[in-house]
Length: 349
Image (cartoon, rainbow, N blue to C red; front, top):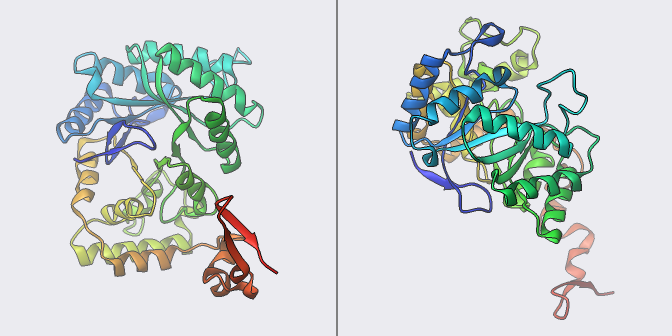
């Protein structure tokens, strides 16, 4: 496995991230400790070093399994990303949310479960619509200065909030967000409206969750197999099935699996992208890693883009109009001359 930099940092991470939400058997599904250890061993043997977990995954069991595994290995080889925000104590009103009190409390719990002195990447898990973004950024920066986390990242948050946060970080000399985790796949392309352009501007790496849309893009539901997706889900509606059929066709052309095609499509976007691939069985991990050997042609990428295209809304669709795209809209852009003093543009009449 090759390595890439995470956002605007020098942190080297593997080109596929191992999602560990299924480590633990709480809630009636998942991998037990022995199976989880085998998955981690196989991932590391292939050069994988980037692990994704959270304080709430399997009621903390995911972090505990990773911690016990790393205690027997070289801790510094692994880049562990965990998250805070979701409740892990329903008797305490400040045991959830983005506030500083919960952040500090949650990190201390994660450090204990992970059996480590530091967390490599701490994500804000989901925006709570309550906490001032400056409180979040200052808290994360304090954790970096204390040596308890190395980098900050953010997940499931509106683009304007992330933009405000990274702008504040630049102005105040605080630690910025270097990665953005959102749902993104051929069946879920709405982040292309605001979130992905924003991440591209700030040099953030995209770390998509559900890059296979919960297994829908594996093609198993087309084959009549069962899974955790409910029949009424949008992931199984007519549009989604048509997109999956295109994925299957291209997989057949390449003698590959549909999952390989879907994962490689995310990696082929014009932003650094590290898909999070979950596994509860060693065979699932081995199959997902094979995607790295698949190469999609430009024609195949174009077909996938066309099959899964979404309406970007305004101003995304407006920017695609011929007159705007070529800079000739009403002659407006032809009347802009460079302002040598300001380095921007000035209007001529």
